[in-house]
Image (cartoon, rainbow over all chains, first blue to last red; front, top):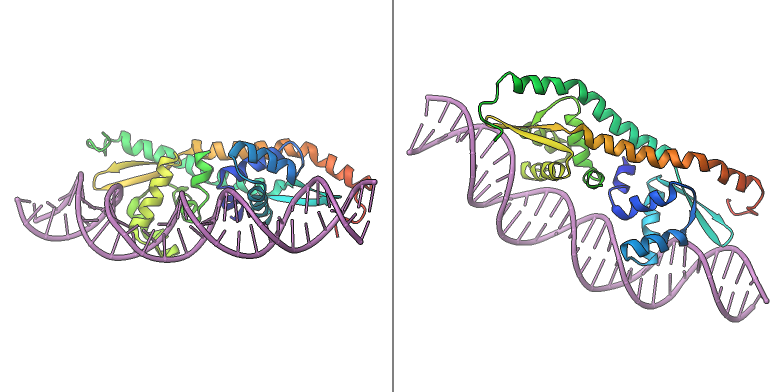
Amino acid sequence: MQVMDALGDPVRRRLVELLSDGERSAGQLATAVGAEFGISQPAASRHLRVLREAGVVDSVPQGAVRLYSVRPEAFDQVEAWASGIRRFWVGHLDALETEIARGRRSRDDD
Amino acid sequence: MQVMDALGDPVRRRLVELLSDGERSAGQLATAVGAEFGISQPAASRHLRVLREAGVVDSVPQGAVRLYSVRPEAFDQVEAWASGIRRFWVGHLDALETEIARGRRSRDDD
DNA sequence: GGGTTATATAACGCAAGTGGTAAATAAACG
DNA sequence: CGTTTATTTACCACTTGCGTTATATAACCC
C-alpha cells in the first residue's frame, strides 16, 4: 500500500484535498500549502513527487506549467482497504460484546 | 486526520489487518508482526500505542491479557475522506479530457 | 509471598524523512 | 538568443520516528 504511506502526511493529504475539485498547477499548490504550513516551494514540490511516485496523483506538462490531478484509483484502493477492515470486523463486534456481557470480566475495565 | 497519520506505516496497517477478523491479545499481535517484520515485542507495543492514541484501535484488559480490537469509526472516517476526494474529482475528469482533446497540448505529453 | 507470564515504559542510538537555500532544467516571450 | 517564469533537483542540517535492550508494572498461579 504505497498509497497509504504517501497519505500519512498532513501536507500531502492537504495537497490531495486541494486537487479534489479539479486540477491545479504545481505553483498554485505550492502557494496554498506554503501559506498553510509555512513551507517553501521546493518542499511542496518534493511532496508532490512522493504523491506522484505513489500513484496518488498524475501530472501533465501544460505549456510552461505542470498540471496535477488526482488519480481516483488510488482512492478506490484506500476505500476498499478501509472497508475491508470494517466489514470483516462488524460481524465480530457482537462476539466481543457478548463476551463482556457474559460477565467474563471481573473488574478488568476500570 | 490522526487516523491517517497512524495508518501511514506498514507495521501498523498489518496490526489492523490482524484485528480485522476479531480481537487479539497484545502478545498474539506482537508475535505475528514480530515474525513478519522482524521487530521486538516492545516495538510492537509502541505501534499499538500509536494506534490506540489515534483512535484506530481499542484495548481492554482481560485478566492477565490485554485484548485489542478495531474501532470501526476510524475506518468510516478513512472511507469518507477517500470517497470525498474521489467523488468530487470525478465530475472534473471530463474537463481535463476536454482540455486535452481540444488540442491545447502541442507535444507536451510524450 | 515468590515466581512466572504478559504488557508497557524508559533510555538511548540510528536511519529516514523533511525542510531550507542554491542551482539546474525547461518553456514562454520579447 | 537572452531573459524571465515555473518547477525540479542537489546538497546539507536537523528533527522525528523506529528499533533495541533493560526495566517497571500488573495479574495469575503455587
